[in-house]
Image (cartoon, rainbow, N blue to C red; front, side):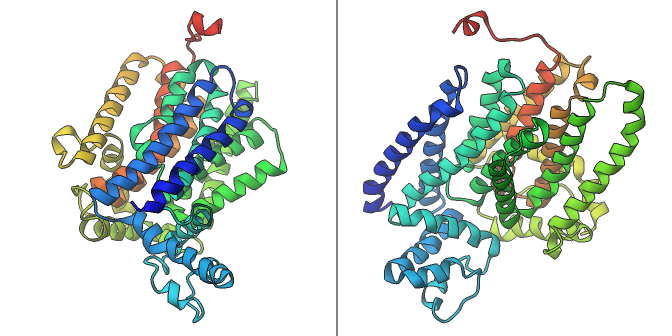
Length: 442
């Protein structure tokens, strides 16, 4: 915390709220406007809280490597010479002599994924005079925009469930905390929200516009640049979603039966192609390398880069093969969704994660018991299929490649809104409206 934070951050927060006030009437209705400012406030508080935790609990960490040891050097280059600043901003990890003075001080300069976040932070630094807190607030606004779009996507499918949908997309504690600050996860989480909204509009609602297509491409591109493995789980789920929704337009049961194997093969082919394209330029994410990448990542996080982030866990031995990785799938999904258990808590942040995981386990069991006679029918809902496919495959991906509860608590936040939405839809699908009479009269 510096003097510039105390001066600039309040001013930036005021501007954010003024901007939010000017637009909120266009993106809300009578039911959703009650969540707009509380959700925005939660994101801002989450971003600031994350900075305090990294400064006073961790004594540094990724968020400070992105800013203090990252984007601030680009900002200083701009202050010294704008031409040098632009060269550094678009250097793509190439340390030319004219930017060496600044680039050599950037911790993640040669880490392509991290440098994307540093460059985004550097752009915000030009507005905030390189105030960490103010830049973090702008990151929280980006996250809020993406999650608000995710909220609207599923609110439009079932307006009567607005309270639960808001809780799932806007107010999950770990998503608010880990998905608001100056981290990779904030950008990728926002990208998922924007992408889901645009896909729904373009392919499901059939409301095509050039601006939505551009927003979709940009959001997927930033996810690709920062965390390719998210797309490995997301794209196949999206393909299933789009085809499943369009299949519901076919009224003939016989035609559906005839189309099912054809559509299944098409979805599998497109899913495979999408995954192959994502990993084409990075051998770590090629299909034949996924097993070895998961092994290297898991052991690196557990015993090297993430050893101070929280307690380690083990699912069994990873042998580097895809088959060996798949054998650990049940344990990996379980650890992502329902662990750490309360008796595994080793520090305050793990307690927050354990309480949340316990609540998710209780909610899962409640829905399975309460809707046990309707589960099969509910699983035929295309929106349930989409959320379930993405959340379970992503839970497997991060669970099998983290091996550290502290790191896992960050990595798993993209799945939490979608998994919670799955449970909400399973519980309420085919049920009468639950909006209470007072709300109907508002």
